[in-house]
Image (cartoon, rainbow, N blue to C red):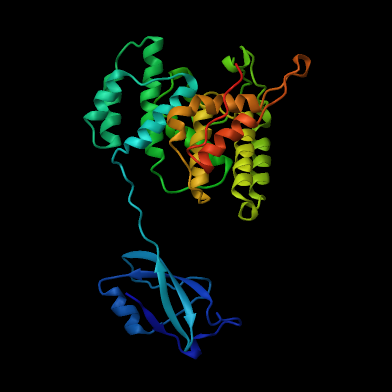
Amino acid sequence: MDIEILITKDIWKEANPPQIDSFIYAKIYFAEEILDWIYNKKVKSLNWSNRMSYKRSISVCMVRYKIIKGLKMKYIAQYTQIDENDNINLNNIEIAVGLGLVDNLKPSQYFYKALDESQTYKELYCKIKNYYDGKSLSQGEKAQKECDIVSINIAKYLEKNGFKFSPMTLKLIHKNIFTGAFEQTLEKYIGVFRDVNITKDEDILGGRSVIYADYDEINELLEYDFELERKKDYANMNIESQAVNVAKFISGIWQIHPFREGNTRTIAVFAIKYLQNKGFDINNNVFKEYSKYFRDALVKANYENMREGIKSDFTYLESFFNKFILNKEIRLKPFDS
């Protein structure tokens, strides 16, 4: 319902009271009868530090008001609770399973059996956890366990509504999707930036490795890349330029490789959430089939060896982001044989 509260002129005791058509935020406390209908529709006290408070309180919400003619304060909107959805989204599961392929990981056969028997992520997670608990696992089974658990965690994370553009979000994504998945020796690296330098042999490079950022420069480098991205004026770019600029940003933070393990999956999830937050109509399904292409494209964009005449090649990553952002029907540029 609309709530209109008459504001009499003698209430304006501040030197600069709100002007007509300006907005304020009031903190309204509700009791048995909405505080006798907001003190019988009369405001007893008003503090223009963006709060209006009443001592008797049971619950509270923030309410937005617009000052309209006649010195009335008109109710505009109030915060609405967003309930978390725990029901399994099969499309998100498929995206998450696809992302496992960046490290050649595939789910166990039991994963699909448990998936068929579960309605919620919580049910599925409990089944998978009970399946592995107490078992002595081979290396192959450890890899399957990681894929099973991370697939559930990624699918559930993709259901989240909130997003903050910050390097801290990378840590939180990593923590959310890898908790319970790594071996004990790697557990201490979950949700924290690495404190060692790393390399990784890449098939697409014939066993060579991209040179990643030094561990003691990770924070500064991420802050620099995020600040550059904040300054971009996407609203005044055409869609093709938007896709290229996002691809360059994602490529840059991937090359830093802030985590001990799980960088590509973390950054893929970050890219999805970031683009959704910016209002892009993205094709998440590209990660179902082309996650390995995504990683290889990142590698090609960030590796060069002048002695061997190898230059970095951004065109594959540009091709991927064109398919991701512009048109799901676009064919990816094939890698040179």
